[in-house]
Amino acid sequence: MAAATFVFLMAGPCLAAECENEYRLVPRKWHVSVWTGSHMLIWGGAEGNYYSQSGLRYDPLTGIWTRMSEVNAPAPRIRATAVWTGSRMIVWGGDTGHPMGSGGIYDPATDTWQPVSTQGAPSPRTSHSAVWTGSRMIVWGGSNSSGSLQTGGQYDPATDTWTPTSTIEVTANSGHGAVWTGTEMIVLGGEMPGGRYNPATDTWAPTISPSPLVVPYSPAVWTGTHVLVYGVLFDDFGTIVPAGVRYDPMLDSWSPISLTNSPEPYEETTAIWTGQEMIVWGGSFGFGKTNTGGRYDPGTDTWLPTSLVNAPEERSRHTAVWTGTLMLIWGGSNYADIWSFTSGGRYDPFSDSWTPTSLANACGSWGDGEENGDWDLDSLQVEIPSVGSLLLSWSRPSLPAGFGVFGYRLWQADSPTGPWVFVAQPSWPEYEMPVPGSALRFYQVRAIAVPSN
Image (cartoon, rainbow, N blue to C red; front, side, top):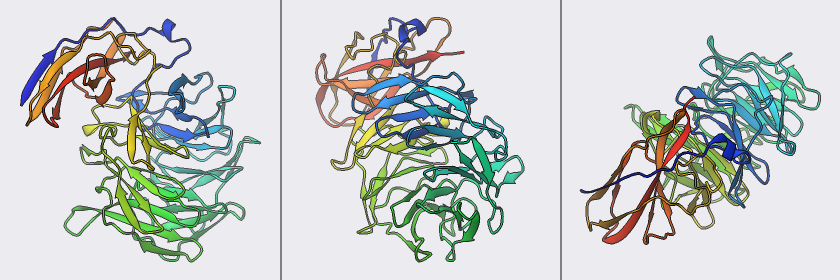
C-alpha cells in the first residue's frame, strides 16, 4: 500500500455574519424531504445527539441552497413524516428519544411556518406513516412507549382540524409503508400483512391475500395501478435475503417480483417511482452500509443495477426524492452511524449516471471561507502505483472557539488547476482508496466545520 501525507491548510470557517443569505449545512440523518416541483425541501433530523429544527431548499437547476426560516418552526426531531400538498409541506410526529404529537406547515413562497393544531390530533408517535389525499393528510400507526398503535387521524390544513381514523378491522402497526392510490390508503409491511383505508367512509378493509413481505422499514411506491415493495427477509438459517412483491388493489392479489439482478439485501433503503421504474438505493444491515441500488421495471419484471461511478458514499437513513428527471439523495449516516453526511447525489436513470449535489453556496460547510469553487488550499501531487491501494492522511485543523470538525471532503484532479472531482466524505483525517492504474493525481481536502454548540 502506498502512503501519502499532506498538511491541511485552513483560513477559518465562514462565520454567521458572512452567511446572511446562504445556508450553513448541518450533517443530518432521519430528516424528511419533499419535492415541490422546483426545489427539494429538507427539514429536521439529527447529527449525533444534536436534533435539528433547521431546513433548507435546494434548486437542482442552479445548484443553489437557501436556508428555511426557523421562526415558528416545529421543535427539533427525527423520524417525522412530511407530505407535499402542492403548495406547502406538512411535517408531523417523530421523536427526540420520546414520541412527539406536534407538527408544522411550511410555505416556501413566503418562507413561513405555522403550527399544526394539536386539538384532536393523534397521540404522540414515531415510526408512523403519512400520505396526502389531495385535500387532507392521513397520519396512521407508529409507536410510543407502550408499543405499536392502531390509531390515526385525518388532518385538513384548510381548517386546521383533525378527524380520528377508525380503529375497527385494523391491527396496530409500526415501521410500515403507506401509499395513496387516489381513493384509499394502502398500508403494508411493518408488523402486519396489510390494510386498506377509505377516508371517505372512514373504514378499513384487510387485504384478502396477505402480503408475503412483512418487514419494518421496507420502501413502497405506487405505480398508478400497483403497489411495489422491496425489502429483506430472513431465511430458515437466519440469513438476510432480498424479497419483493407487487399488490394489485383491483384484484386484491399479491405476486412476487423477480429478484434476478436485484440490489443487495439491505434494510432502510429508499425507493422512488419515476413513472416507469422503481429505483431502490442505499441501506444498511447491522453496521454495514451500501451505495448500491437497482431499477425495477414492472412492465418487464426486470432489474438493472444503478451505476457506482461517482455514486454517493455508502449510507442509510438518508432521503430520496424524484424531480421528474433526477433522483436526489441527501444526508444519512455511515458505518455504525458514527457520522452523518452533508452530501448527496443526483442520479439520472436515463444515462445511468451520478453527479455530486452542488455545494457552491453552502456557506460554512468548508473551512477555508471560499464559497465560489476556486479553492486556495494546497494540493498534494501523488504518483499513483499501478497496483494496491493509496492511503491519504492529513492533519486535523485547529478551529476557532465554538466550531467543531464533523468530517472532511476529498477531491481529486489530473492537474493542479482541476477540474476537481469529489471522491469521498471520510469521517477521520485519512482515506484509503484502490488505485485504478498508474496516473498522476492531485488531491485536496476540506474540513466540514459546523458550530459545536
